[in-house]
Amino acid sequence: MTGFSLEGKVVLVTGSSRGIGRAIGLRLARAGAKVVVSSRKLEHVQAVADEIEAAGGESLAIQAHVGRTDEVRTLVERTVENWGQIDVAINNAATNVHIGPLLDASEGQWDKILDTNVKSVFRVCQAVAPHMEAQGGGKIINIASVAGLRPSPTMGIYSVSKAAVIALTKALAAELGRANIQVNAIAPGIVKTRFSQMMWQVEQIAEPILAHLPLDRFGEPEDVAAMALYLAAPVSDYITGAVFVVDGGMNVASAVG
Ligand SMILES: NC(=O)c1ccc[n+]([C@@H]2O[C@H](COP(=O)([O-])OP(=O)(O)OC[C@H]3O[C@@H](n4cnc5c(N)ncnc54)[C@H](OP(=O)(O)O)[C@@H]3O)[C@@H](O)[C@H]2O)c1
Image (cartoon, rainbow, N blue to C red):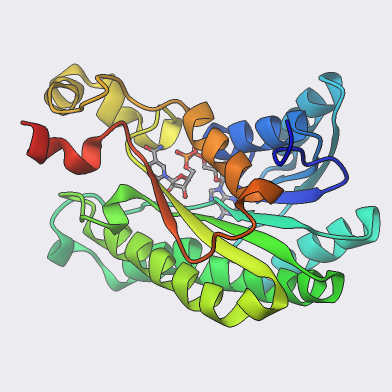
């Protein structure tokens, strides 16, 4: 489709061995992109890369922990060595090591969540931006959360980290616009992955959420991948610094009763 083709583009997705990152990798490969699949476990990312290749796409599996600057730099260098460019970077890897009252958390939990969810975005952007600038442009997509717009109960630090990702998205969009690099964020609601399984698998928790969810279902990773395709493709070239909510209406749930 005009404006939605990623033919000839190189895309890097962090945390793409499963869940939303995997779905994004598969979707963007179907649109023609060469996809670097990455996470901490090589055998898992290799399986996704194999899936992309089996479907007729091109993919490269690279192990990288987004909390480690040297691994992030190597990830980007190997991408550029292999395919000569990097057009789209998707910051998807994240963690949540504390659930419960925010003030019960330890400093170690704060550091882990902020480092993995926020500073990692800085690391990846710092590594990819010079390549994008030299090429004449690029796109960065940060996976935030509706929790970054309205804090989720018992997930206080995670919510703070996702609010920071949104602020980082806007700050970078302002700085990188003149280099023709667009920076946008996606804020998913509850999406059926391992990360959120307690919320959609435990009936006592899932039912009250669904009762107030306008679209009456939890999200699928492909729902988020569709938005990633839009933001990765030329059709969105004039959009930067924006946050796209993909949440089945969760964000307006109180307004609709
Ligand atoms: N699911 C939801 O309801 C939901 C809602 C809003 C936002 N989100 C956001 O969506 C993104 C993806 O979440 P998901 O639900 O797809 O989670 P998931 O199924 O748990 O997948 C997380 C991915 O990140 C990788 N990962 C974790 N820590 C990493 C690290 N330090 N370095 C590199 N890779 C790492 C994991 O692979 P390895 O274990 O192999 O490293 C895995 O591929 C996250 O940013 C999350 O905050 C999710």
